[in-house]
Image (cartoon, rainbow over all chains, first blue to last red; front, side, top):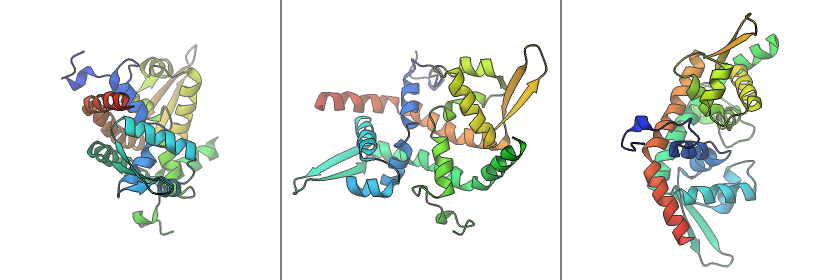
Length: 124
Length: 124
């Protein structure tokens, strides 16, 4: 594969590296955590309050994945108890901007989707 | 809630309609199916071949969700056996364009993510 040619990548191909990245973006909580960190650094407990419905386990797992992929940096302060803060890296900020396009899309089209659902149920 | 004010929507709020739409966009196969239908109409079997790794059950479920939300229209031709075709609606095309921003992002940043992963494993 010629990795200098964006057309050489095939997001549908299970063996293409772009598919792995795209799948990560599509994980259940990734988008919401990226959006939550967009305005600035948050502690674990603040993030958990912000992203309603996320469990401690899922938040830990999502943050670890984002840290591993270079989207989020983690800073530990030796307080008692320990304070852990999470911040978007430049790469994470860039992705978070792309996810924000989806958030804006969702908000802009809620009425159309609601209307489609009502029609579908009626036709059902 | 003032639904004319986009700021009134809170994607983090489990009770906000924007959260339901955003969660649907984040479902496992939604993005790939939208991208697969972007170039044009496909039959079920063609879609299944295109979106590698999807099962018949997951494709059926994803298409039903997209149809219900007004993103995809379904046409049945009375051949033997029956032919079923799926096409993006204008709403689906609009969403698919937003998802394409994520695909482009993924392809553009693969090298940075790979480098971050290698560093993380080494530090681990």
